[in-house]
Length: 563
Image 1 (cartoon, rainbow, N blue to C red):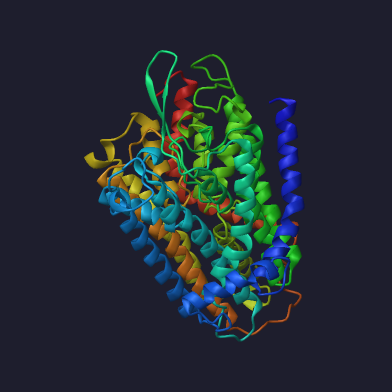
Image 2: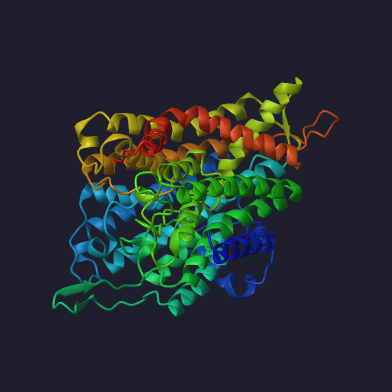
């Protein structure tokens, strides 16, 4: 690593720590309906959204009403995005005349963008029209991120409320997050990206002549507006197939740094938002510290693995598959950020990472996408492990577990276990089935453990709602499009619905005053115990699968064998 790399890492961490309370405090005001600096200039837009939707923002919802509204909105989104792709050939803003998308790819993409996964089995610049990119995909980048924030806020309310039958209003949470947080930041962000060289145009593609005399079609389009929200909302879907390695999406070292920072910005800030709503900011900072500690440890291991001597080539720090403009550190740093934050954007080929670095990218996702995680999703995913940690701590001292004054009982733990098991089952069952049937093996690019890693990564990315690709696997087949769509749907909503039920259960409970036996959740000890629970659950669940893929590939690499 060079001095520049250490400076970049230090600046990244400093800016994130400084921005977390500022942005987190602002989001807390937004979601609680308090006045903030954008209330006056954008208040009319919020009211317009309520009027058009026939929504009364003051109306409170039970957890069932909240869950039904959320599921209805998202299922309607899947149908709409699917239909736009199927009808693409007759819709406007299609200067290249792209035909309709195949049914299985359209289904996969619809589920992918609605679930904030943004897994892409297609090449954007040769498949999607400008209309589809903007009206179907970019819109979902906004509302899927806002949905994640809404769920996180609902859980925070459930903890903070006492003897309440409601947990808020989904439509108000969705609208306020979109209007006051995601939209204004994205506008400024898009303008910055345009200044760096990201394209934003409705002009048709350009045909250029190379120095050899060959013809080359250069894709264009309204990319900056989509790139801004795909990073800010931890969506990750590329306007172009090369994603953040494409110079029209990520043209400079500055744009690369800002894109990485924007991926972590809101997930980190939401830890402070959570602490503010539950009236325990120290607990919010404890969650932040837990996430940051895990991220730095995994990043350090990934960098060590990437820079270590590769006996096959008799050298370390191989550039194959890395972003040549930014170097090895920025490629690995980007890979760890995007897999830790449920953002599918990539600026390097993950399949070309060293076996252990690629395996650590999978570990980031398999731990539950809780190392900052997606917008909202990282926080509510972390709540699963927080509740489990509190429950286990209570069992160890022989008393009813309590979390911020609320007793954690069998009903809550049943929902927590369901939410943890569902996406894990999608990863393991999907990978296992695909590794033994012809439809799953037919599109592999590699044999041996690396080929298995390609399959395992695909289902891990889908079920964790990450969306990044290991590459090497052609997933744009009817089999993989359908299987991964199922994994994405279950990975998103089999966590959200049980957690909303937990929020409703906690909101209905009375506040239990702290006692000498209450386990404090705002101390470094709790953070360490929380990390232990996350690692143990993840290890018990996924270590056997990882042993068949990246771990055995690393051991064989040390013997000089590659795949």
